[in-house]
Each structure stands twice: as structure tokens, then as C-alpha cells.
Length: 120
Image (cartoon, rainbow, N blue to C red; front, side, top):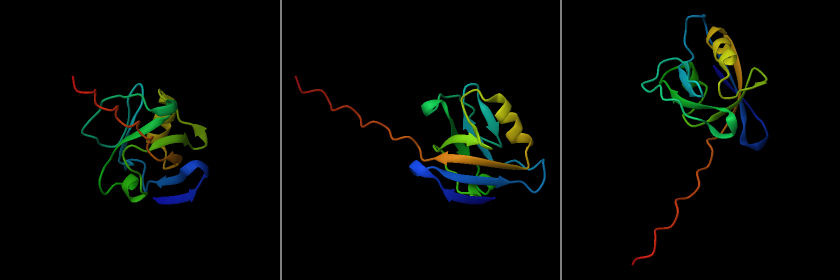
């Protein structure tokens, strides 16, 4: 596994390479429906920002962890194709692939919480 060059907008390219087909990448993604890539304690599906896939979990010591992927990051593209919610074909191809190139963006910024209501 190796990290790649920075792209525009804070996104970066990440290349994951398996030594053998049966070795998992060691991450799971949030999508609709859920797409799993490696072991994760939580399979809850959740819509990710801008319709892209979001990294839900990175298994410590995995290929994904060695490449620097972190939970919360957004995968914008898989092997040059847009990675969108429900991308079942992309998920199946990713599981079977020996190498996957991803365009990864930092986690979306959350809006600050609203101010507390004024006292009565």
C-alpha cells in the first residue's frame, strides 16, 4: 500500500495493493446500501456527503491503515470512476481487485451546533 500525490481541494490519491486476492484491504465504507471491504464492528449504513462513499472504519494494521486512510474520509473516485452511494459494481470490483486507486477527500466539516436558547 502506498499513498499518492495531493490533488486539488485537499483530495489525495491513495493506491491500495494486495499481495494476494484473498487479502482484505481492511476498511468498510458507508453507502446506501452498505458496502463492506474488510472487517468492521459496525455495518450501519449512512448517507455520505455529496453522494460519495465515506470511510466508516479502518482496521488497525491493515493495508488501508498503512496507506493512511482514516475513518470519516470521503472516497470521491474508485479507479477513476465516481464513487457514489449504492455503487454495488464498484464495491464488488474493489473486493476482487488486487490494486485500487482512490481519490480521497478529508472528512466533511460539520456545522457548528446552534447556540443554546435564551434563558426564560
